[in-house]
Length: 389
Image (cartoon, rainbow, N blue to C red):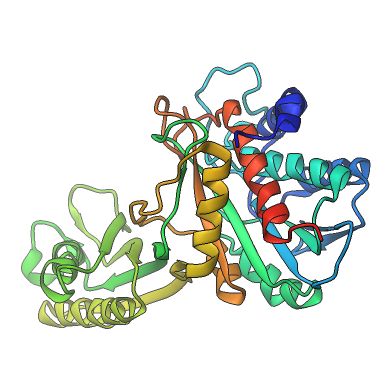
């Protein structure tokens, strides 16, 4: 079965929503206008209930099926926030706010779930309850965790939860998924190296923090090459190296390093954190300096449940005719992990086309031709997951 004909009819309208959201991006929890737009559309559709202010600016809506003999509830999630990126697409609907951009396609995700909501509110051809989760702050704020912590899953008696992300490099409307670990845990670190500053011409009178920090940058790479099992996945990236001096003739007293660690296994995550601290402390001691390591656990590994993944893939095949159920592992983080930790669930990728920029790039653009497939998948998760009696 191809994408539902109703979404072909609605594509122009849904595209309008998507482009409006693209023009008006908001960051993290500051999704007030986006949430208001979502709420207004949901009221037009005649959903059964709407709750706003969840996780500050999140929106939760309920659509009841024609019947509810099983009492089953399926939740569908879409993220709403943008990124702090200066857009460079030249599109007529480009961001109106310099420095803010929908560079990850959350405008598309929100619009696809709105499209599915309109269809489901019209037809209600399912037996059970559908809960729509419009989430703020996926891009680093952990909005998914806060929605779970605020009790969304319990309050709405959610049994299963499903989410979707567009993916450049895949054919438009195609799908890909995998069982088990899919997206990586995303940890962060902040290292402060302290020594003894002084004149660059007299290094013997100093404890050179630049040298200490440089050894740390190199040595931290041995975690992946010499500590972790070679068949396991791990990324250690130092992304910022800052000294307190910009002068050419000063040895700085303090150097700060920042970066991220990505893993797909909690055992490896524990191992990396332990080695990370040991390496930094050992190097600092070797050179006579000191170090403060702040290592923060971020989003956990995003794990797809076996039963829900098989179902999600079957639904994708009904929409597009095929689904790659052995998608490549992704070292990016995804805070849908908090939801799929709270309830059995599955997260799927939908193709955004083989041309164009990857996500988080100033030239990225969500492909509106993907909308019918995404809307259909959301809708059929509900209709096939809770078939009408």
